[in-house]
Image 1 (tube, helix red, strand yellow):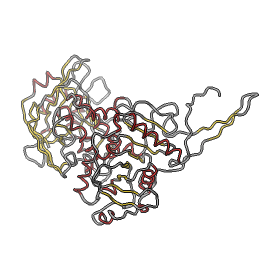
Image 2 (cartoon, helix red, strand yellow):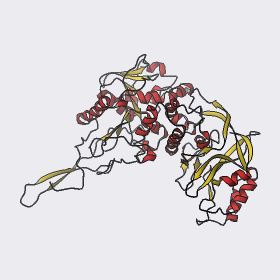
Image 3 (cartoon, rainbow, N blue to C red):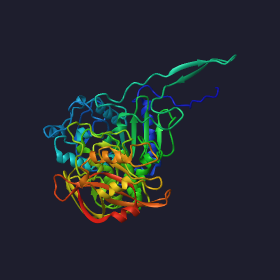
Image 4 (cartoon, rainbow, N blue to C red):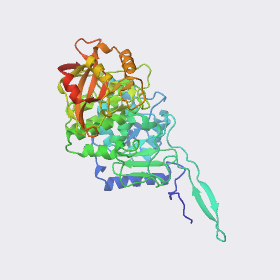
Length: 535
């Protein structure tokens, strides 16, 4: 056969549940169980409830509360506009006796079918296994997510399915038959197939499937020991050590690096997060930066409800706790908190609302936390050698539920450090800094002011006028977070919070943004010692 730029690929059956496809899935799982160190969970964590299946399609199903570890699958999917077939206080008792799965949306039925075909009797589906109208049960099960997805034998992901009514076991397109013959030789046949899930000569998969942009599903991917993505044209397997696709063209020996380290952000994340899980200890700053990267990635995900901002990350947070980052404070960790408070909204990003329910307001929770803000994505400046410029004196957290990593009703942090008045800040903004790095002001509602004479922008006086008109500037002050050395300018700089008094809580402050690239020498000269309570 002549040389071709296209990579040889295995035949892909037209049905995802065919014997051929099921054999491929079973082999991937078997190889992972046999050869990979992460094959067995650190601890078996049985969910409170599972769906117990009969061996055959005609057999019944029911809810079941396991007393001992069992082997089960878990489903990752988007509910969307699906019909209301969840478990409630009214039907939970009956469902322990009998569960009519024929009434389930198609995606749930497909997951049950694949579970049976894998030879397993149990599956966990959140909509069925969590009592939907019981807030306490919901919060408790959300706090167990890390154990559930990590303990699942395999996670079945309806990666390309818009909502639960569509299912994921669709007939694939038939390969195209191409005949060719060189002069004087016998005719040859070549079968070609359009690959939608990845390029034919690269391993990087597509990144625009529906589940790639969902907050809950990011957690489910990261926590899974192994996961099977059901795509329109093939299935893709991923574990913490390897990725395989049905056609064979996108298989690799090593799982992707963490999203910000050059791997595939939507399918990846396993390797780095697995190292965090496996590590017995980690340097404080390394942990902070890894967490910041998780937040960066997560902040780009969509949620239906703003109240899920912390619960949908709670499983990942629970897995990080063993590295001793201190107490969890509304999406931030107690240790090295000054660096974590330096998040900002970059207006040049494609800014969108993270939560889709229009009834949810733009800020739900403490202003100092990225998790409380609807605008996304969140960015961090990753300074490995930054030194804290303030200290956390105390904090108070009032949780909304029993989940220690979940929704927060109220939170206050007390910081001691140094602050600069708005008068001194305006004086600084009027004066160009010698060198390349002028201060940058980023407001939490997505507005930016860059006082950089090297960029085309408004005159400084005009920018300052707009800045003062944007917000009630009279009461704003700048509170230093951390200092770092700028090797390009060979100077020390400070990044700081912009805060102003709360309109509802006397003696407390709210965050409104950050100021980056302040010269430390100027900051120290103009700053005064101050302790603030931030809500």
